[in-house]
Image 1 (cartoon, helix red, strand yellow):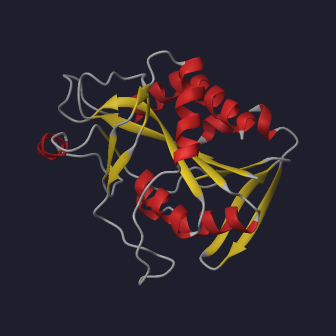
Image 2 (tube, rainbow, N blue to C red):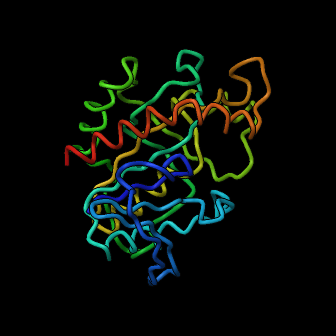
Length: 228
């Protein structure tokens, strides 16, 4: 089984046809999954799509994947660009991240080196090039706590060390590792971070640009699923 975690852009895709909705009981609470023959999808922001980033139950999601035989997890994420050279509407496959705001959750005494699945990440890049000629191979994702956006001063600091900013992926990735799942992200650059461009950032703008990349993300993820 393959796990996909993201937002509403996956609600109607071929790999979820004839899927069923199930509630999985985990050690960390219930997780709602959408299950098809080969794929299990989880909306990271909940069934009602109203769970803010800092309240997402990553451990429940990952335990639900593992209980259902998932080996690979693809995380589709919306991010803000920290540099004008990374254009809004681009797709980026990160190769590293920075996250100072969380620790291990399954076993607080467990040490591990954070990393993405090499095989899954390579597939995302390979399939991505078929649907997006200018896909960005590599980049550092900086996670902030959210749900507020960052100040201009914060963005100036973050831009010295990272390429994009978001509120979910690194914690999601490291939690997947704790459950021995192979995880790799694909990021839609949906806005310029505060101060990078001349226009003000808003939630409506982020949603608008996210929709513009939706078909590319769906096609890439579908191709990766077929290749696994």
